[in-house]
Length: 286
Ligand code: SAM
Image 1 (tube, rainbow, N blue to C red):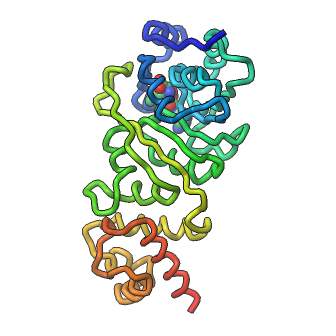
Image 2 (tube, rainbow, N blue to C red):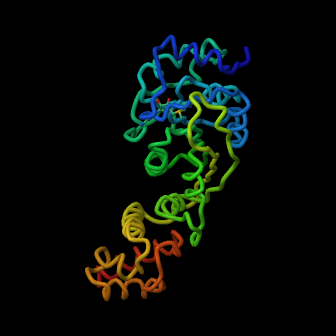
């Protein structure tokens, strides 16, 4: 039996049966349009060989579209009513027993997932989209690629190159793992309830080799945070506290990394930040 998708009427009926009134706190805007979930799955190029993890499956719109492709899905949902109902919805829609595993948990805290998923597909809860993405990339190295729907401003930031107006800490940290690209816009009208922000799809793929060790990643991210906390300041000032306690010490580290002490954080790529982190390590050892 082929997998069938959820329609708008069924989604509202399911929510009513479960007594679910979508909340802003949990970013509950459910997709009620089959074309949109099929488009997400198509952009993610999901195949039957993929083991997909979905964050926030909600009532299951996107989950069923991924399962329709024959992939296995692990879905992490914080709302117990939704998590408990999803396996039944899947069976009612023709999903083979065993193809879907639902984990009822806060995605920001999960550290263990069954089946080592390799693809992330999600319509993310907007209030936690960046921390949850970074948490997943850090915690699950088996994830090699993904497509997520996020608020337009967040998607633009994630995909922004150095030097662009919206380049910031999320852009630099996301780039640690590999390239990101904007992969389409999504109309507000496909959601219930209709949100007051625009949405985009963002795709990423993880680099074959990690940029650096876990220790280097931590140190690099601390420098990124410090650089963007005072983004208008030159790096020798913004990084004084983290690079030796004075702007003179910071200048010396920056120079040994080949970065101008008068530059600002928004000009640096993640590789530049990593060079600074490595130079800081070298300065600490000498
Ligand atoms: N995937 C569904 C869809 O496209 O219709 C729902 C997407 S809705 C934007 C976000 C979902 O994430 C909701 O089901 C919400 O309950 C869930 N959620 C919110 N915060 C979460 C968290 N910290 N961990 C796991 N799920 C979360």
